[in-house]
Image (cartoon, rainbow, N blue to C red; front, side, top):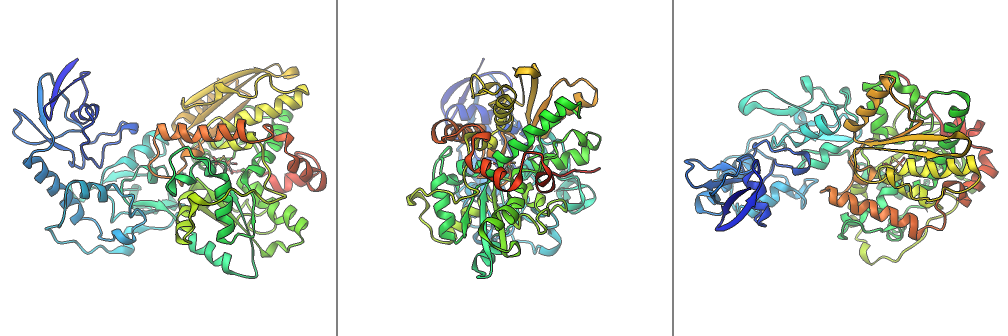
Length: 573
Ligand code: HC1
């Protein structure tokens, strides 16, 4: 162990520990804009974390400078404070002064660091930014404003190492260095999977979701439109953070109340469609197993993963379940089943989704997603956008009463709600597949081997006549690659695989609250598992009374003719 003295306090650390990490152990917070512990990203790029080390002529960047035995460090001398202030001023001098209307106003790390560093003026002239050339709005999901980029390269690391997509890279040299797709292509023309994980790590407003809030306000104010809304499983466990509640708050009832106050005509739930997905997907899996169909079958509800498969593993597309995602099943059902039940012309129905996911904005615009005869889902808002709408409407969210979903597409089971955490789709599917095959319930409905934040999880289960069924779960595309490469090599003996694009699943999707850390991921997941086992009356999708009714009165049977038309699709190379 090394003994380091920082600001007159001693701390013992392992060799290889940086000054930044050692100071953190002492509770000393050295500001930084580029370091990101969970990504193991310490590029020493921003220089905000400078400190003074006795015996060193220059100040050092504490995020990359290794601690040494008996090293004496000062993090708060006049020299350090002046240098830090200068570094922040230089960053600000090359950054648009748009704080009061920037999307990250109030949640911007540069703003916070400027405050902490005591910056009260910027002594350098601001350049004139050619706005039109520097903002890429080509993607339906992610906007890139390179005027605001501070070259921290966190987005590069997440794109390269967590998602293995490699769209965002540093280009040019020296003071011209910037982050961009190769050849400066618009995002839409690249292999971007629209996951939005770059947004989640961006310290400033250089990356953000395509804002569709005004389109939804317009629909809500149009008296000729009947506007219905669905919310993804994860939103009930994350929306509270946008509105002042701590991570892990389950806000289902308040979310419904807020949506009613915003003016939605019906407040339905994506969870209804998640239960429907389990009936369809479970039936498809059993059919594939019994008839020698393509195995392993892979879940198809995470649209970033679908795009990843299309770009990087097109030869494996026939492993995908033909089921549409719950979001898209919901849209198709809203404009057929609900339209028929309520006697409303589907052309007058507007379907809005609230999703923790930026890729859902892309998904709803896919040409395959018009089974109802109309675009099945009209607008997708992220959790952050809904948070902004609620604030704009002056709703006192925290003090709202709990309200309930509308029928006939609002009832759901615990199996549906856990879709929002990695492993949840698999657990939900296993509960129903086991019941269909054996006629009884799983001995323990909690399938714990597929829960948690391990990158790749596996389980094996005796399922009646099917024998030993092996399954696998991965979240983030770097982890999915490990499994996909085994399938390609013919080394896969799993029957069913769940992939979720974002690390931790939808509770940490690219449209959710910032910041998101592993600790926060665990709290949000726990909220969903609590909903499953303590709040919901039913915990298995096939027990949902509203789903039974939908089959009896409209769909017929799982994987039947109507289902195939409305709820299934094929992705092609
Ligand atoms: Fe998801 Fe899904 S779980 S993809 O992560 O299958 O976004 O929450 O809505 O569609 O249900 C997201 C979440 C979500 C779909 C469901």
